[in-house]
Image (cartoon, rainbow over all chains, first blue to last red; front, side, top):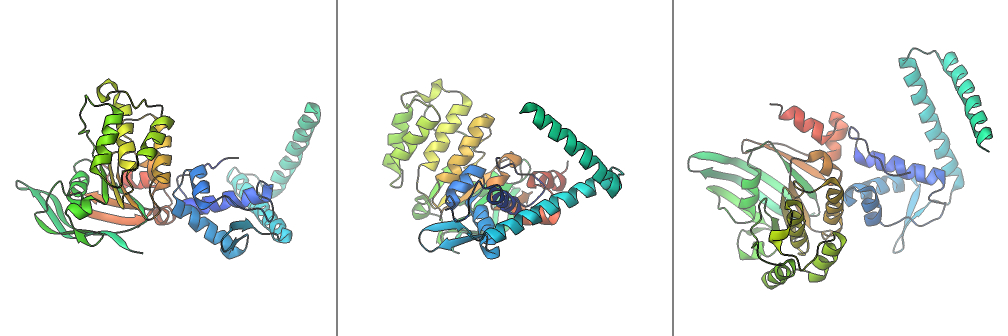
Amino acid sequence: MSWNLKPDRPIYSQLLEYIQIFIISGKYKPGEKLPSVRDLAEEASVNPNTMQKALAELERVGLVYTQRTNGRFITEDENMIRMLKENVAQAQIREFFDNMELLGFSIQESVQLIIETGKERQNECDFKM
Amino acid sequence: MSVILKCNNLVKHYSGKEAICGINLTVESGRIVGLLGPNGSGKTTLIKLVNGLLSPTSGEILVNNIPIGPSTKAIVSYLPERTYLNRWMKVCDIIDFFSDFYSNFDKNKAYEMLKRLNINPQDKLKTMSKGTKEKVQLILVMSRNADLYLLDEPIGGVDPAARDYILKTILNNYNPNGTIIICTHLISDIEQILDDVIFIQQGRIVKTASVDEIRSQEGKSIDALFREVFRC
């Protein structure tokens, strides 16, 4: 997954979300050292100050911590990461329901569609295996 | 944070025409700033005033708290929109030339960047395409360890892939306390690397803000805001 930034939202909050996803997905493991601000900024092609701001915010909520001279590390609190995962998943689901509502689907209809599509997807996966 | 550039009531007239009409501006060090405005809004004039190629009609400019002169020119690295280098020179000769001229020029850095962009140091400038010439010039400018970089249209003539590399070069090769002011029309290409933007129109500053401030307040990109503010 790469840094794909949208033009209509603040850059720093998008960087924040990406790093959260990297933590949830296990790209960055609990207790692991994060790359330097400069390296991360280069990877995402953004200004180092903006990356710094995103990391400072992650630090504020406790997802990363700074060891004075060694750099930044991901939290070792796996409970916290699991909660983050659930929050992000819920936000995705809410957004999905919002979008479905725009298309005129009720919640029940949307749920029904999810189940059907989920089954299809499952079959496709089984078929591939 | 310290202030690298300050303009007080800056005015510049060209034989009756007002190019800069009373600009007050403060730029902090360690920032990457986009100087954006439509054609003929005074961007290049402002940059030329800061690097001492033009002198103001009235008002004051301070770089690092010093009035424009040899000691400010030593810490300002300027990329003009047009080349001033001799066409018959080889790239390696120009590098020697720059290194004689500026004590803060880093030759190794220059050769490293040339290599990354596949430019042969033995090539003469006149044999190069427009884009390659632009790359050479930008390499020369970014190879100085300056406090203030003034880049006038740095990516106009280069292809999108090289543009990405050049933006990375800009990000990686300025010292963290250095400040970069970039003039360009290719806003959407550079807005990710900017801290702040300055909108200038008819010689006046119409807006200064940070990129994320604009994005969160307006819900649109700098590029979109520019098109709206300066709609023709």
